[in-house]
Amino acid sequence: MKAERLRRWRRRLVPLLPRTLRGRFVLIMIVGVLTAQLASYTVWTSQVRSSQLEQLDELSRNIAYSVASTMRFFRSLPYEYRHIVLDQLRNMGGTRFFVSVNERRIPVQDIGSGPEKALVVDNFREILTRELNIDDVLVEFSRPETLRVYNNEVLLHDLPPRWGQHSLLMEPLSPPILVVQMELGPETWLYVATLLPVPDLFNEYRWLSGERLLASLMVLLTVIGLSLLGIRSVTRPLARLSRAARQLGDDLDAPPLRETGPREVAATAVAFNRMQERIRDQVDERERLFSAISHDLKTPITRLRLRAEMLDDPLQRERFCASLDELDLLVKGALASVKGFDLHEAVEPVDPRVVLQELADELALQGGTVCVSGHAEPLAVKPLAFKRCLANLVENAVFYGRRVEVTLKDSPERLAVVIRDHGPGIPETQHERVFAPFVRLEPSRSRNTGGSGLGLGIARHIARAMGGEIALANHPEGGLEVTLHLPRPSNVTAL
Image 1 (cartoon, one colour):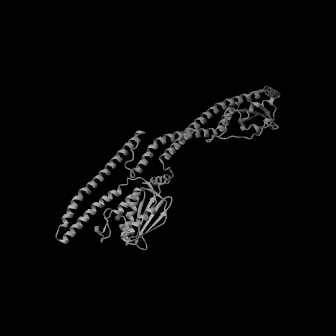
Image 2 (cartoon, rainbow, N blue to C red):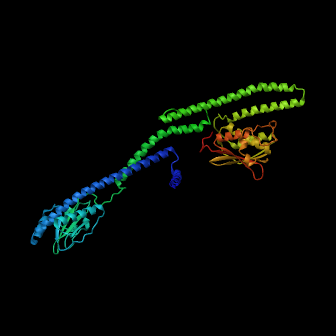
Image 3 (cartoon, rainbow, N blue to C red):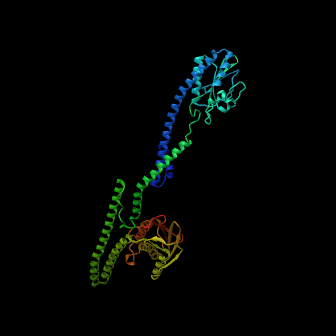
């Protein structure tokens, strides 16, 4: 079940991946950098929060002991001296605490939450309860602008500067103020306000803070820039190799690849150059072999033909000459197939309509009727190979149907040449077989009537060399419909 689920997710993700090697490398680098930054930020945040909690624990305990000492001091004072001491503290200024004695608890707009606040409150209550034996201790945090300090609930900001409230105001930071209220006696409450010097005490950790976002973007852009430079240097030889592979069928005599770059790329270039050289040698050897066979067979065929003419029996002479004509036709067909596969010529723009019209005029002299319709823009192809491909298809259609209709269908992506004859057609089960060499489906057709069964095979080979294809279909009204599809060179390199 899990394997099936993984395969399903893989099928969904594969179409989303970049199609180029460079794009996939960049995607890997981006994902790697973001993952590394996320992991580093997670570890760093955990360490910072742990360190902050340790610092806050120690600091809050020290302040709690100081507050306990202040409480003991005020407890020891007679009631009539408490206000005198408070006036002296206000006149001195610069103290760590703002202290007042009130008749009741002062309401405080408590703020903050989380483990930091819980740690501070628990430490104060624990220490004050243990040191002073007091159960009723109120520990809260307040914003400076909403803090009230006296019985009349006057705001801290409204106090005169000489009263010492400046020790609690740290504009523009405005950190939260810790407020501790404890009961001194009946209707007497000690009010102590102080600051905990811990930055960003209640500020939640933000992953996308301005500084972190800027640092992440700088790291990401730097890595992507350096990666693009490195990936470009690595993929450039691969791009050259890809172009050379596409052009291999076009020009076997193209200059070899440069055998430079990283070891793997250089080794690939060496292997490709050796492959190109071996293919070129094999093609040359094949051409030499067939040329030698043709040259060597011409002499005995001619000698046999002369001897056949000297036979007295007309029937034997005719049969003998027919066998020699068949042998000569087989040799010429084999040579034609070799030359049909040899596409060593330059690519030029060719008007398909003009080529078809020339073929129609030539076949009209032989009794065939070819009607050409439609229009097409010039196509960058090898002229002789292109003409040979069309000639084989049109001549085959004329032979079987006598009357042929050729339609051009052009588009920015591809050119389609539809050739329809009015012959008997071909069974669908034989559509693929007719492209095999020396295959002829009509039993009545002999080699003496022309043809050797190589035309369609040569035409398909040329079409595929140009990046196209040939499709066969029986027309609903009778006859065979052959469609030659050729791509425009804007998308596929012309061959």
